[in-house]
Length: 169
Image (cartoon, rainbow, N blue to C red; front, side):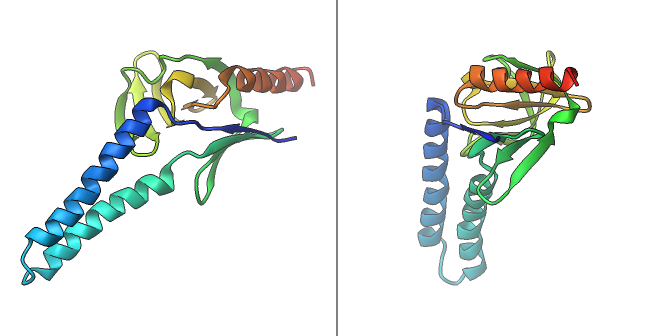
């Protein structure tokens, strides 16, 4: 039976997303009106680039998590990313997991915190979150991921129950 977990936004994510949207829309509007009409390509670019950044942020944002008997699915607006639980080694909560992490590639606050990060304690990891204070670290055989479900304790209990059931087989 699938268990669904929401991905609530932290205050910092709400603030960063609002500021980014205002700046990107502002760039597009101001650029459109300031650039002369004789520069149509520049006008199109000044509108298209901020629009692409916004669209990319929306497409890659995390909308929730689904825990099935065999997998963790990270829900996105148009698709989900799946991790098989058969490869899971451990799960633990750590509200400090994303604090001080170096973002190598990804998004650090436009609708989510997603991408590839590095931190001495965790090494290289993938983050799929919306509220760093709810971070849960999942270590798989070949990778580590950090997610931020609405109820980290309930999520951890469900995953540990799954691990215990697999171990007893």
